[in-house]
Length: 426
Image (cartoon, rainbow, N blue to C red; front, side, top):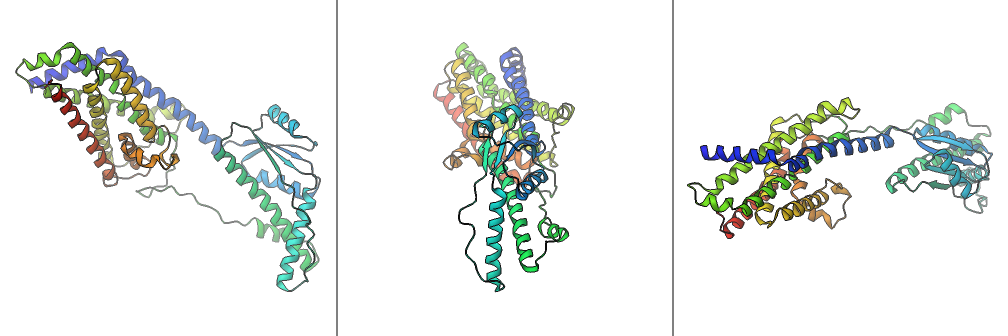
């Protein structure tokens, strides 16, 4: 026990002297969590809360175009800037830049007339099917003019699709109103009452959003719940820059050889390193999670909601930390120089984070990566934390993710041990 304690004290002193390693293990992940959570939180606010600037160039003077503009205002997604000027494509682009509008909509000159013709044609076909009126020749001799949709290149495809969905809903509402009014007039030869129109058109079924969770809670996940666990995992695996380089330094300085002449086993030294860096990883978790709970609300970010099952959180954190330590130890055993340990270690961590779902969500990856990502220990770490933080699960829910992590950690430990044996260092 004394030998183990002496080895731990030695490793702690070496760690304290490693200023660069401490920076990578604490300062960098703290900065990453702050910056990326702030950026993603702002993005969520843009999508969910802030209105998108929309320039509407209305070349039509009829009722349908006014109804379309009113429908767009009711959507609640747009901040409308309307103009009745007859602008061409370049003028629309210039006006968008002047008014900082991300999107623009050009309504053609005969939009209302075309909508009326379509409504009349649909109404006549419906009355003919009902046997009320004989079918007449279609009056919509040509198709409706398409509405031109201009967008700023900064908008991503998925965001454009959501905007186009809102525009189509507004167009569908205008067309439905025109068809109802025409059909009602054809049957009763009088105007459709506004109260009846509102009852038919605006009485829509509401959509209730319910996030899926294991404990039945309806807490909506936010950017903090996604980013804090993800970048905590990234921070834990970045101990490779400290632990890996320290192992290489000991090999090059002859510490392994000198330990073989003493009445002890180098496995004691390896065990002490694992205990020391386990404490480092758990400290990283406590620091970053504490930031999410107490600091984030002070700077206007959503607070981190700690899972209900604290025991499961502790077990998952320990297993993730041990897997990160095993990986760093394996790199240190096989690296020949500190530059190799730091360079390969850092690059491999970024690659594992990329294919493990930390840099890019796993569901957004191509199908060919769906098998590859399961070889990344970070994937199983992230799935374990997400099951606790996002799905509000318990220990029994994360057990299927802990087993692969334990398997990977044990394999890495065996590889490191065999590497030391092959080099005759133990």
